[in-house]
Length: 399
Image (cartoon, rainbow, N blue to C red; front, side):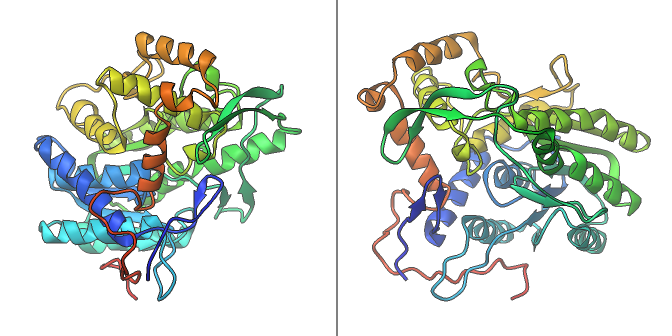
């Protein structure tokens, strides 16, 4: 079938298998170009492994240090006349590239919050790898059912205490406008968001993996967070999502205590603002990213997801030396974004930006390209007018 992008707001409803495969190949080539991560992991579990930081982590582990990888994700398979999700195509392409390179790669498609998927993952580790030495936790979901009490939670994206009003952009049309978001009406919204996006499920995973004996001596686990500039604080770090990130970060000492007898350690990595399916849904953030990209590209310090993850692994997690953290114990690979000169330049542009000058003073086109790249579109060398085979299977997942 001929697959073209169809969008609804910040969601792309279609994805392209050949474009997604090209996306994966590009990321693999970048990691290979940076050389071997000498002290890197060898047996890796990535929870939330199909898009964004998750797939970039899996690529970095596999092609940066030759790791065997198991990926857990929840994606829609392809069927005749119906394209699969981008994450499905990403995972199919990754497995094929890994196998061609002689690397172990298997995947599990299901609800990572569930006990069933945790058990299935543990059984696969026992059968094929024995133990894992790195667990990457990179789940992003609007809903979660707690498997231990059966309660389902839905997250909300809202400020706390006061309404929030600022600029935002429709990145499809380029219209800059003001947006106002009312604060949460009750603390249940906050607690539900923490239940979905906080550290509880990360802890459940590590508890279950340890109890099953599949964590290696010296195991590391890392989850991803974001802080950002003050202009996004009301809707992000000081809002409901920020409370969830606080909980995620507060889970680190709990896990460190749990892993102590294995000489294991856990970290939260604070990453740069990037175009992901999740960030596209947050008001203000697409406009901020468009301005940030403009500034960072002009300064020659721009990074995408794969550059961020390669640097996290090679220059933070696996240097063979003590891992540098901030005063709260977090790894910071948002250091280039948060440089004073970068933030001052973005703040100046923020005060100027409008619909009329958006294309001149921001990198809105770069934002659009990266958004569509997430779904396999806007890649050079792909004929999007041609028929393509939409039925692509992930090799390790039974049909």
